[in-house]
Image (cartoon, rainbow, N blue to C red; front, side, top):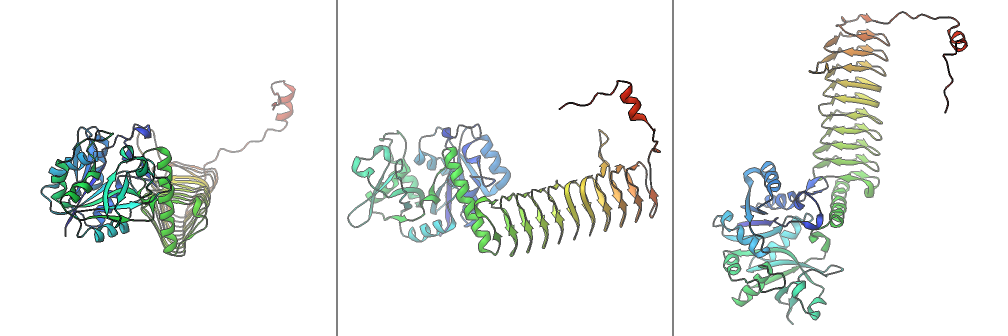
Length: 466
């Protein structure tokens, strides 16, 4: 049976105290609204409709940019409760039949297995919903059951009696309901409650009044249904999501030396027998091959690292590609467009931007390579700088295969260093160097005997203090 989906994301999120809409706050590097949308799309639900507020331009823009036409947007105006929010999606659902899953944009930890349970239990029920028993049920709607364990109604905390507030089972807020029953029922819902809103929970009593079956599906993982309404709840959701993602990596054969200090995003994929050392941060779309070693303290963002590579301590990699058996760091920075061929080495305090190092090329110390091509086997000495920017435009440097660049060298682009050419230490290169040639440009050294003594005697020299 076809299942449509409505995701409620029109809450103002005032307790976040932020100019950013609540559902755009990131959880493990991804806006929390992305999680329920991707979950629904991954289960084949359709159409998928996200209900937003009239003022949520940023949310609409994000959904359009990330999901395009796969997601429809409905506007709830004014915000009159969860039941009214679902009614606001009626036109966007475009006459859908079958089942309707109702999710929330601020519940990022909901998993596919939860919806699977709900789908199985809700097959013959007009209304099915998930329940759980948190340590503290205060503030949540309580699930009232009769002596046979059948769900009678859901009562919101503000409307509950003292006896009802002692009930430990709460409504997790995740529903699977029949279409078009849900809209006929919601049209009969009234705002006779403490909040003056149209409650989605009233669907239970509407279904029972019609003699329809209602199923409350108990789950033991209350944390999975935790909504995010405050910064503290956001931090807890982040920690729980990260633990889930790290455990997924470990189950796939990755060694995570300290899961408590290793942070990964949902777009991270790591090959078996790779080792992640403490305090690594992997975010965005990251692909790491087998038998790599990462960290400690490495930051990797939207990068690809091939089999057998090593990223040493406190290196930062963004938008780059690292070939097999490369070594990066410690304390290296690879910026977008950096690409290392197999076996290349980039050492401590080396920065690489929009440049390619060929197979076995090396830049081991204190170097900046920008808009450069370093061909196979070339060696770039300590303190080398590619002077790629003239104040208006970027220019390219090409270092030929097997070339040797001496320490303290400036390569003023555009310039080409020929195959197996040698650049003497301290040279400023302003024109092309032929293959196999030696380029040296130094001011002749002059030593002036007795200069220090005469300077001191003149009184012009004063010893530094402190």
